[in-house]
Image 1 (spheres, rainbow, N blue to C red):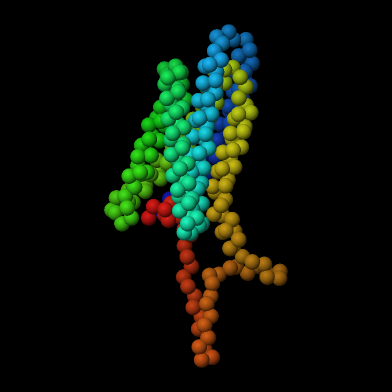
Image 2 (image 1 turned 30 degrees about the vertical axis):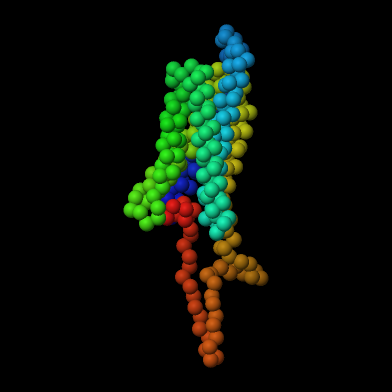
Length: 262
C-alpha cells in the first residue's frame, strides 16, 4: 500500500506539471482568439442559451472541479483520525462523491437536452467518457466486498485507479470547457482559468502536504545548539535496581486508503 501512496502522489505531481503550462496556453489562446473574435460575425446566442451554458459550467465545476477532489482529500485525511472522527470523514467522502455524481448527471442531461452534441471538440468527447465513468465508479464503490473477501484487493485497485483517473481527467476537461466557452461566447476567460488554476493548485498542495507536516515535525528537536533526532518512545522499567529498556518497533507510515479498504 505504501507503493500506491507513492504512485498517487506522483500522479498529482505529474498532473500539476501539466496544469500550469496548460493554463498559460489557455490564457495565450484567449488573448489571441479574442482579437479575432472582435472581427468575426458569429451569430448571437439567446439569453436562455447563455444562461444554460453558464449553469452547465457551474454544475460541472462544482462536480468535477471541487466536490470530487475534496472527496479524495477527505479520504486522505481520515487516516490521521481514529474512532468516530475517522468514520465521519469516511461518510463525508461518500456524501461528497454522491453529490458530485448527481451534479455531473444534471450537467449531462442539460447538455443532451439543450446543446448541440456533434462531438466535434475534445470537451464533448472527454465529457461523454466521464459521464459513463463516474457512474461505473459509483457502482463499484457500492459493491465493496467485505474485509477478508478474496476480491477485496482487486476491488481496491480498480476503485483507486478509476477514481484517480476520473479526478484528473475531469479537472483537465474543465480547462477544455473554458476554452470551448471562450470560442462559443467570444468572451475573455483568462480570469476563469487563473482562478481555477489557483484553486486546484491549493487543493493539490494540501493533498501532498498534510502528511508531510507530521513527518517534518518528527525529524528532530532542537536541544541547545544540537539537533537530536526523534526516536521511537522508550519505556523504562525498573525492577530490583535493574533497569530494563524496552524499545518497541517503529510503526510504518499509514496509508489512508489502506486503513479504509483493508
